Length: 438
Image (cartoon, rainbow, N blue to C red; front, side):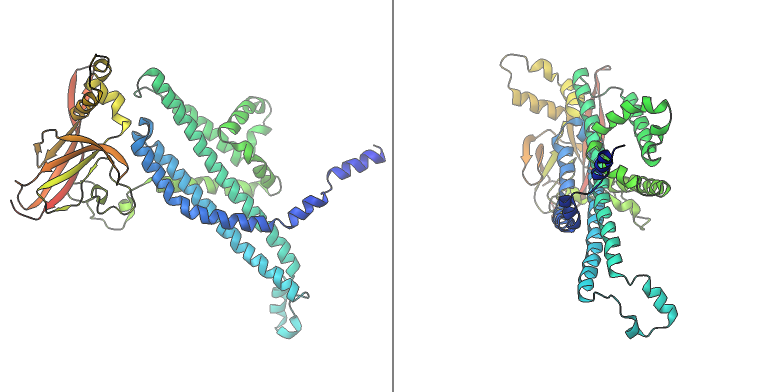
């Protein structure tokens, strides 16, 4: 190799002056980004719940009729928590770093051991961390690594949400093509589980499948495909930079712990009702006959998340009437409500009043029972501005009721096309107290 080629190779690894200046001043954008992002993260967390609430009430049936939206929102919440924890930790270490930078200027010689007059045993212990410059260098590496890891974990979780979104889109498109959401997609679940396990094993094993002869050739297309559907092309080099500069067994243990923790945290965040984790053993939350759910009473809701079944103004009523709002979403329309009223056939008829047809379809599906007595349909469609929900409003006369506790049951009439029959299914119950007599 000529001297010229040798100098060229050395120059290829020489850090340019402009990059070195940026590296030395990287703390400035790190602190700025951490501070700004933290402010936004604390504001975003409650919005994730509102996003889930919107999907549950105002979107496709795959969201309102399944737990897909719950899974997506819980992963986003966990990603938000991880990023907050990472950036707060980063700022704490940067604060310590800034303290040592300031002390290195004020006390350039560091600790004056002569003035301490400690015994030899204590001096030797303190000397291990007495070099301010060494502390600054170590903390600089720790802070930069923490910043990168926080971003990496966040992008991992965001990539998972993107992947779930693609799967959801695929299922919704397939249901539209087939003409029904009631079809078998078990094979899709199996494929997803297998691919997920394979990619996690490869991640935890530091690329184990990439190092196995012949297997790596088969694995390569999956590796490239998964890179696109999880957005890993945006952050994979951070991961490779970390695993190539640290002991692999340590990274593997950290990743295993992270995935186990993430699994349980996402499940934990997916629960809306945390009554089951309380220490009260005799709290009857299972049956609505014995417990009040405050999301069914508009005056009691504080977080903006109202019941997705029905709700009234309050559980204490001193009026002669009751304003019952029945929540309507898209999850039952295509498979249950429209076939029951022959919607597709009737709407093709000339002179048909579409609004009247739609209302009659809804009235055939929803039913209200007051203290065991079926009420006549008296619905009007409403977009509730307070709750942001679409549904049916019913003004119920309760002037004849006695003072005391009463129940309202909401049921759905599911239509079986094959047997040409309808069956009732109770969906929810709410309790209210009438305080005045007849």
